Length: 391
Image (cartoon, rainbow, N blue to C red; front, side):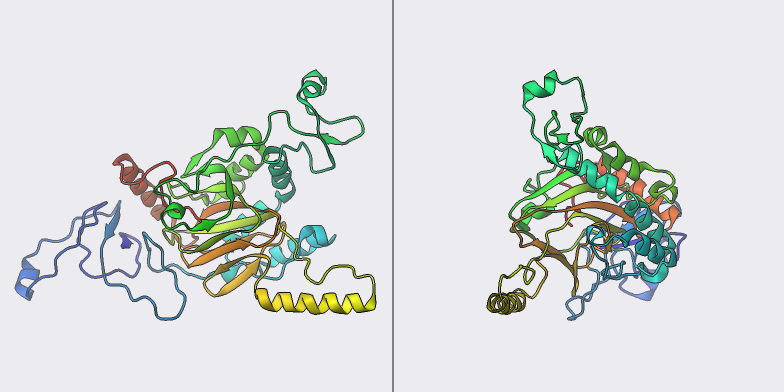
């Protein structure tokens, strides 16, 4: 289906005489006289219009955006909007300095786009706070330092509500872990229909189908503040606040994967801020002797050749990337994409949807109004049955 918008010039198909929120296909005229007698299309200068057609050319052997529901023509597109090659923040003491310099030059972001660059910089600058709140809310840890388990009686009898001990160690949160709030196996969801994921995949949502989650905001106030900060994402109106907008902690457990699929539209870009990334220890074992070292190295090389992909990674179109803790990755999920975690450990990213920077402010307003109209009519849901559920 093709979406076109009045007053913003974009490539548009023929025969797009349709009323607002209509998906009716106009009939092609039988002759020129009939075409001349046809009344002019309605003036929808302040609305968004959905029409069918023209036929789409697909399966050319080249990866291109192919959203499952809606496509807005004329938008720049790339599988990834961030350059590869960063390192885990934990592995490099100079990470912050080097990344800040790189961000200032905007060399990481496709097209040197200033809006996407600002959004990435804003989210990355809060990496430590976001990761700390994930560990506290989802794993039940008060801090990222060493943890000490306390019993319920000890917790209730403690004068220190924070659970921190005098020696600086941290205790398990008395409230317990934050429960996942999205059933990826629910009937009607993108993943459920085609058994799109295997293994275990947990969501802890800050924004679910465009609606902010009060429970998340209570448990993770700093993370919610990153999303709400008017100096950051909201300054440009970048948060994708539609029924297809999501923002959540995505925990892909070990030996789990999300099969190849496409997102529902090309109106958004999807940002991953990696918080916990399994290490690929192939070839990194400390061997005790020369022969053992040679044997280990040979086995490691063989394992890499057999696997032919990172132990935990994501493919968008024909490009494969690894996640690096603290270094945001921005992708266009209207391309076919998949993700996997072949390790025994969890992989955690903070996922956030933002508007595609080429969708102008007046278009965003009309698109949002259109989706609200459709939701009011019951054409799209506000719960787990809505589309757009993917990484």
